[in-house]
Length: 294
Image (cartoon, rainbow, N blue to C red; front, side):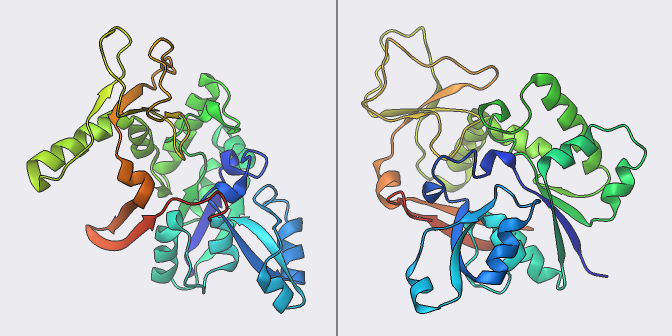
């Protein structure tokens, strides 16, 4: 029996929510035969995650091909399974596809997924038991209220989390909700990493503290401010742009942090290490781009 995966696309990263997808690493551009491009573009399930791309050199060399802009999950699972170029955040999906040959992938719109989770109908379990695992849905590492997630109130969020955690007791869901919620509290994660660094590998770490609004003598020279529940450079204030008389307020339970600035991060980028069962799977280098880099 083939391995069945349900992928729920995050509405926070649909075309309507991403101001300029050409500056977002979650998207790729690929040239497809006209018939396949038309099939992708007219799919109601993929609406918002597939749209016409900018012309490329390949189109000029290969008549009958057109550029299509796709969210990376759609590209990797729908059309890119045999390519060696796998987008950064879906390396684990690619590993799963290699491990389970003949893997069947289905997509579901988040609105439908959310309605099923919040439903009290008895077919809740039957709907999802047909899958071996479920991937995606709303990224809980960022504040859902900041983006077009469909979870616009605390009540909606709590209902969604309750249904999602019930689902996690039925079928494996990646990423797990509790891990994502903990990861959204960046300061707690930083404390763990600092302890690992000082106690095990003795590697240098930037100094991070919670932002104080009562210490009038503190200096912000050489420091960057960042907020929990954010990613992709959202809610970041670079050195030289911090107004000590108008510091940003915390956003509910999400706190602002003060961290020593590391210039080499902007110059060289960063390396991310992906481990599966404590084994090194990939090392991914993300370098600074020019806004057009994918």
